[in-house]
Image (cartoon, rainbow, N blue to C red; front, side):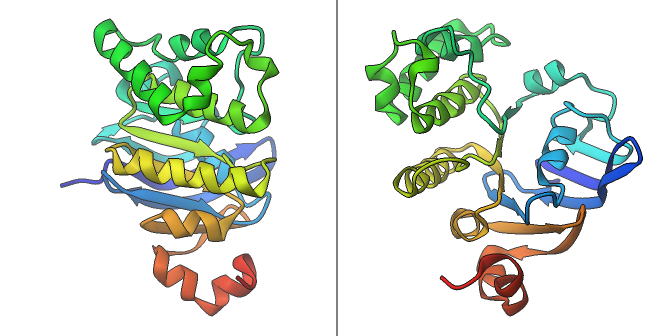
Length: 238
């Protein structure tokens, strides 16, 4: 069977700057793949190109065997590829419940969407407690929960997570990674972009390490976690 997602020779340019240079990797259905590297390595640009939010300068992205090169971002969401953006991008004036309901805007199966809403509230009980609260008044950790819950309301086949631990206290970081692992265990494939490489690789099946917009190394997460070169460059001492 073909991978759920195939990225081949992907390049992204911003004016004269080549942020992503010939990146290739794949994501198998049911897995977690961590895309890690230092700040400015091209991780977020790779994710944005996959989801159609920035234009590709070269290469191909195939999702469930279909080439997405000319596909609009909204149609990519409808196909089942959904991104949680860096910075969360919640709709601050709206309530928690309204944010979650908007996550299901592409869906026609309203009864199934209501079931998924209860699933999200079960996954994030804090959101259930605050469903009528204005989203902008939530804490940073709660806003991250809301952003992830909103994405799950779109019923994704592949969930793209961009820096979910950014700006969170250590206790909340652990909770976020445990939740990501739980989402994958429940059947949603995950592509995780993270600067916290060690934490990301610990829950991932495979890792892809980017440096200066290119793939430096890739492989099973346990191998990368034990690789002296990866430890020295990206992980540091445990």
